[in-house]
Image (tube, rainbow over all chains, first blue to last red; front, side, top):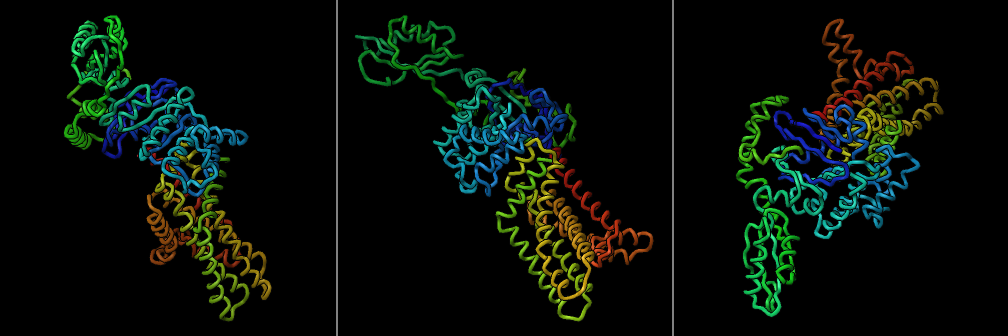
Length: 359
Length: 240
């Protein structure tokens, strides 16, 4: 379990993170989502004990990162935004070195290295020099070094950065494969990636956690709701009649917000398509209502407007720039360590009610 | 201790696998050889004086090699991002510094060992004591240790190897020139300054085969001070 309480990190006079509080349960895969400069990397570096906090408490597996950094490092595997790989070593040599650095017993090193190579699918390049590897393999190698000592916590900073579409799919699979044995924290500025990989999303903005939850929760919190497109068939009827019966059935489902006809996804008698917006995920209830209304459900698909969701979460670019400016001004006014004063100055005024509680 | 040796082995491996280590040793040996020929073999000198001149020249190349070998130790890793591996592993900063120091010291020891043919030539053709040879080499290793420590400290300060080399060389030159400053000031400060000079008063006894305990302590203290400063610099970076 990772517990972060009122974390602040200053670089000189500039506040990079804080006040930041969050809890990550054991076994979770949590995504840290935010724009560039939001404080993701700094937060992850504190979790990995690469940096120490200016103030606040960070506990990893019950150990404080300031009081027990040495022990915490043994429990955490960290992939920074640039994989820390030595180009003059082979993949096996490098992983062996990383394993020994991370206190793996000499007798276990070979097995741990083989396991990490297998999990990261590096078998075909295990004997090659790291300097000859593609960017995708280097990212994999970065993850392999992070898990080679079987840490309880794995912290990955932008693991898909610079990967091609095929490599991104492979990387998602690799990260999901860490579920169970490790608690994983992944950062990204791409909502789609986070939502594909993680159980829960923490949205970070200006060094603070603004929202927390699943993608559906987040869409609900910002009032966007959930959009579903469905195609139904009523045997022996016209498309209009099918649409009308479907409307009646769906309108009876509690929580449905809007209901609009849509161009039929496929041609044929009695086939109609509709788009439904609801406060929460009502797909199963809608399906039951349609079946009870004697309508065949040909297709039901969730529509993801991730770009809109992300923009709604973090505000438009102009708003973000305004916040950065006011943050810089606030930082200039307050000295390092003036926790309460800085907190009061930098709290975002626009959405106080939506601020995350208990994360 | 395991982590220290592990890091030292990795760094030594990096020196030996890249052309850098070989180039530094080759350049230092070339300069040593030329110096030996020009200073010792082209004019009439006693064997002990030739040996002393050899150690004088070798001390300069050892200091230069120490700075060049150590400039990359932290700065390069920071440039390439690999320092994060060390920084997030359960390894203490002192172990990182000690491992890196040991690797560069091993290279200096190798360089020093490769110069042995020159004192051997004097031994074959002249008359010098093994004691002078041994004490001279001890002096070279101690001086090399001090230069590496200064270079390692500079490397921990800088993000670029070039800047690290410049800072390291500047500190080294300041310590070298303290004996000149000592001449310009009065007692007791002049004694303190000349006692702190890296080469002049402290290295000459080694050149002449005179082993003085306080000179050994001086070089060990200088090495310890700068290694400690490098360790504290790494620790401070986590809080920056």
